[in-house]
Length: 358
Image 1 (cartoon, one colour):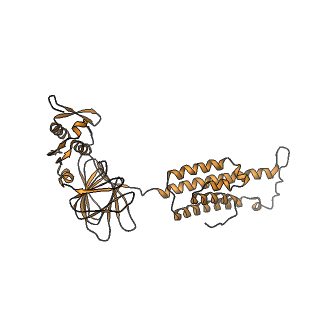
Image 2 (spheres, one colour):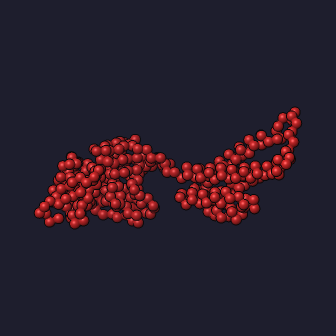
Image 3 (spheres, rainbow, N blue to C red):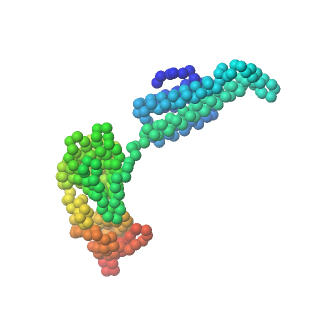
């Protein structure tokens, strides 16, 4: 960074900024002048910055440079305003006021000036640190997502600007994150949706879902976030599936599903009915555990279903209709040999019928 002034306030702020960029706040206190080191606010401010740095990643060098340029500009403006009000610019037709060196003014003008300079230096340091904190926080914020569509008790279909369509499962939300510099349209999903993306070789389409990223050029696939790990099922075309934390992408082929775990992506063949039947208001239970079926019903109707461990591990086969919540829970309870009773706000507990083996 350039040094445009010998002003001690700017020098103090700049030393703190450079130490922050190097990641060594200790150098500021170690290299402080005697009068600065005696100031109790300096270690307090440094402690504050340590907490800020611990909660957010370091900005890029370009962002940091812009940040300190703004701080310099504000402090230069403050210095200029202070100079305009200095005694050298007062009306010379009026006699200058003699310094007050009476016994009632201990230390005289020099003492007051020293105290003023100290307070100004501390204030400048506080301002610089606060400005740095605010600018850093602002620069590191992710792009503001905009709600595109929300499905509540029934499915909702939305068409994006490029002609792609997204069908949202009940109690799901789609957000538009941004259009990246390379033209990629980025969206975020909460819940479950079926995406039918038109082919466009000049831009990509990306969906973010709880640590998973799906990148496509033109294809038909589903994404669900209500499972322990986000899942993607590919019906047509090809998609790249990635972990948000990095790593090599995995390419899915039609008929495959990918579950994005924290350390890997699990890929395998899957029946399309298990991922697409909800679009026809059905739920496929073919070779699925009761716990998995309960979780899917919970997402579809925005409820929580509790099962005993012995029942949750059972493997089920068949179909459930998803026309009505009460009927769906009654049918699911009958398959399990019991019924669901309401135990709280949108919470239901399975009760085995008398005479059942559960």
